[in-house]
Amino acid sequence: MQVVVDNSAGGDPFFAGEVVEGLRAKGLSVELREPPHLKEFDTFVHVVSAGLVIRVSEQPDRAVLEVIEEVVRTALMHRPSVRRRARSVPVRLGETGRAIEWIDVFD
Image (tube, rainbow, N blue to C red):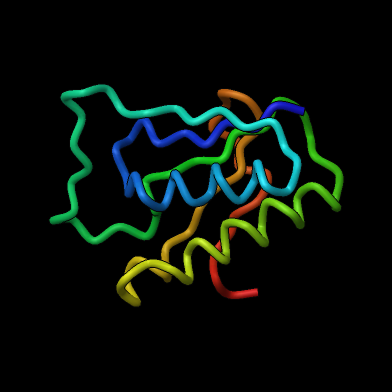
């Protein structure tokens, strides 16, 4: 299964990098999708999303989904503010908008 950490919305690049490193350390094949050079994430607006999407090439089994959740939750806890730690990250099937799971620090 291919996992894409989609940061093309221009969210927190350090968060995206930490998620990529964590997933690779767990043995998953991961691609990081960077934002276009001119793209900026608007932090003025209150957002509940981290500006990051985890995309999977196929429906993951529960064990793989738990690994993804663990890595994302750990990375969220390393964010410098409560507001950034409380954001949610969707796991989406391929390039669709269909979220198969939402991950946040609350279990």
